[in-house]
Length: 381
Ligand SMILES: Cc1cc2nc3c(=O)[nH]c(=O)nc-3n(C[C@H](O)[C@H](O)[C@H](O)COP(=O)(O)OP(=O)(O)OC[C@H]3O[C@@H](n4cnc5c(N)ncnc54)[C@H](O)[C@@H]3O)c2cc1C
Image 1 (cartoon, protein in one colour):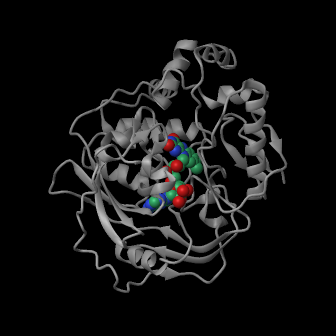
Image 2 (cartoon, helix red, strand yellow; image 1 turned 30 degrees about the horizontal axis):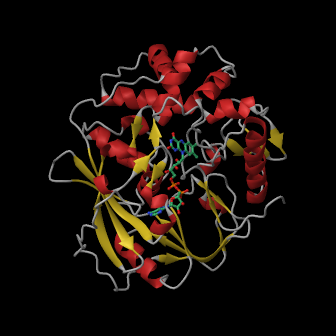
């Protein structure tokens, strides 16, 4: 049981979706390369690739792919796609509708909506609750799968319900958010038993006034320097955009080459023992105090024992800017694995595995990728 105990599926069948009808979705020629559809700019060909811009077409493509292996991508900002490509059908979920429910504080968005379009939609309507997550790259659907978070806000804080297409029964259900388990970069959709569920739409219930204070030090430094008015939604959004710009945390699918080729933080922040927390703090190279770092870690991970994976990598002997051919640890932000040129997916995978093994061998800590690996990778290649 991966959804909370006692949960029953709410059978809110979408009457407006005409399941079984043929809607047009865009099928690209066989073996279209996936690299241009990922932020790491790697990935081989998709055997069949469908690009779906309406929910009806998404459902039609899902029904058509019923007997095939299925891969989903929003904007590929959290995926490492194999150089061998993906067999079966790959669907790019690029649905676009956003609406406000009856002038209320609830916003409904299709799974393919670019996350920041949703944030901007909320900010324009003076609704609070998403603004700290401004400019996180990717789709609404993947945001829920990964429970994305930044600067103290997470998707799970405001999510109200999710509609899913169930590949086992070819129908659409609505799941209240309370029936979905969420944790740090985790939702129950990530469990193997849920891989027949495709998110098609979701609702977020926001607030007419601030829900949280901005506490993240790097963002507060930007606020002070630029004199942003963080009593306003726009001021907060500007502060976050500038903070993200400075940390190389921006990426936009419409202009992928204007940005670094990364997938954001490659590894999740691990939970470690109290003793290890103290030892790892010693690897801080900047002027931040232990108290500041603990607070940052809590804002990112919600638990005192969750430490920044950046400190773990430093403690294991890796350094900022370290490179293996065209794969590099970002010169400032060691957690971002960058493709600086013509790296292959396998090379990025090899570096990730080398880091994981070294950290385990030297520190006894298990670090787990936040990035999703799609397709086949060779071990020790
Ligand atoms: C520069 C940069 C900065 C980042 N900063 C942050 C940050 O601050 N905070 C944070 O949390 N993350 C961050 N990330 C990670 C990334 O933005 C998120 O993980 C985002 O949710 C990825 O969205 P996507 O649509 O591109 O996902 P994709 O890579 O396309 O997909 C991710 C996973 O979701 C699955 N999936 C996609 N759509 C659906 C669907 N409709 N139904 C079911 N499964 C689906 C895919 O199969 C895949 O397994 C950053 C990434 C980059 C490149």
